[in-house]
Amino acid sequence: MKKKPSIRIPSLPLSSPSSSPPSPLSSPRNDVAMELAMGFALPTDLIINILLRLPVKSLGKFKCVSKEWLELITDAHFISMHRELCLSSPNIVLVKKIPLLEEPLMKKCTKVDVCALSFDGVCKNLEFSLYLNDDEKNIEMLPSKWDLICFVSESGFYACNPSTQVMTELPEASCCTSGEVNAGMGYIKERDEYVLVHLFDRSLDIHVDYDIGCEVLRLRDGVDCTWKVVDANCPYVVRGWGVLVENVFYWMIWDEYSQPGDEAIVSFDLEKEEFGTVSPPEGCFDPNGAWSLVELGGRLCLVDNVTRPLTMDIWVLKDIENHKWAREYSIQMNVYTNDMLNFIIPLDYRDGKIVMDAKQESLDCYDVKKKHIKRMDHLIAGEWNWLRLHTESFFSLRSK
Image 1 (cartoon, helix red, strand yellow):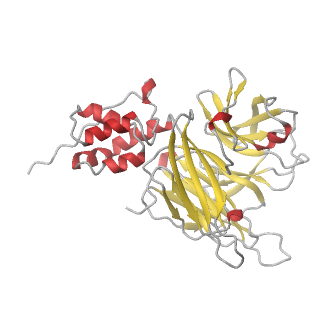
Image 2 (tube, one colour; image 1 turned 60 degrees about the horizontal axis):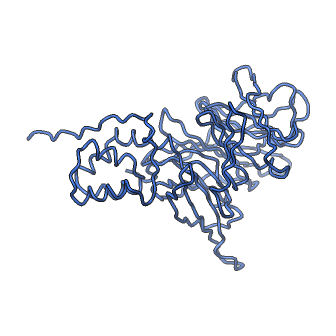
């Protein structure tokens, strides 16, 4: 018996203006796909180009149309092309937590509402709810801008793919005696894996300030995962969430940075499983503990909102080995009130613009060349706890 030839998937020009997938819940492309499923004949190349622009949730339904469509949609090349298209047009994900039970001595549950908008705010692409068995006051959301979002609470870590609306509770992490949660999440493209690093205080002696252990979890598509406790201890108490750049996580050290020689940033090398420190920009100080770290365009950046009035200085680590920084961006923040300055967080660098979360009330863009901030507060309505960027993806949180 001859082997059935595989379906040929043509290359699609990713730079074409029409290649950005709007991924709406109901759209003309979805309607066309439904017509195709009902028997309307179109050339295979056109069918593929239509399917590439559909959201993952719709494609999951269209797998059931026929064996040919199942083979096409699950083809590795098709999935890769779909992901590349989606990367060019991410979603805005808005997340809100709502307590469901307030009676004393009863188990509390929290409803987590997730809403995804297209980047231009034209379409509402997703809207669904998750439920976590924990007090809403204990639930936090780690920074992310990829396929997955991650929540952490006293009960543990949870990963969710908004595209498939599937959430899973990750394996139990080590207990932290201080009750604080310090972690970091990042994506390594070369290995197509997510990495979670959890720092946990295991000191039981009241005479010992801290004994901070470290464990790592690697999350791959459709593969079971476990935590690995590393031998190295974190030498400092940290603040904020960890930031992953070139296989190294970075955190701000909790102590204030008020004089030369003080330590400001702690690092953890995933390959060597070793901790280190990074000196901040020379001549800059952070006595109020207001600095934060972000990753923009694959580079580690230090954000300073307080040194200069109504100015956000973004320092870029140019030379990792010698700890050399350069103040690459100085953004005039006159469009904001003073009480908002500490709540504006750079999320990403895209097409010459720095995308910023303005207190979960607006997604704003700073044009680097024009030195102008465009506010997009009309896109967001409601009291949201978190704002993230998200890319449509088939990433599976279940074992295959």
